Image (cartoon, rainbow, N blue to C red; front, side):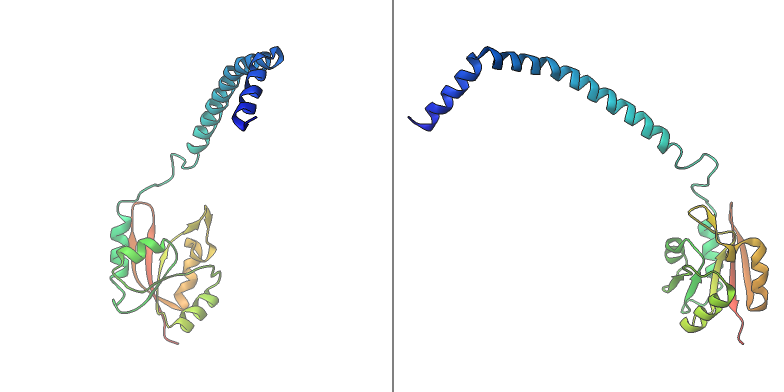
Length: 176
């Protein structure tokens, strides 16, 4: 007996067997029900995710500040083009729009003392600060408006530029 012949007998036995054909009929009846349940689940999850996605950017958040690029260009123009700059945030914007080859992010510096230490070790004399800079919605205390007065002892203000929603300050480290 060949393998094909054995296979054909099993299929015929399955199709002729009333229990097997009954099983197939019930399975076919259940498929539309599963499709309807699947469609309902997709609809529910898509509505829920649409509601969540509308809450990602609240209507009051600034998505684009038209004058921000101009403020970056003006603030960075005060720094000689061959000198590196330390920036408090938005590193990609500064790297692209500042016309400076060397731009560094402040990182997780949390005191003026550590800022000055890193600037001295890195031989960086200029820092551009975005006033009240936030990371993930949390204000960085060192660059809060009320704390920028502490910069006066160790830094010289070269310029202050305002965009639609922020102020950008350019500082030079005083020689000690």
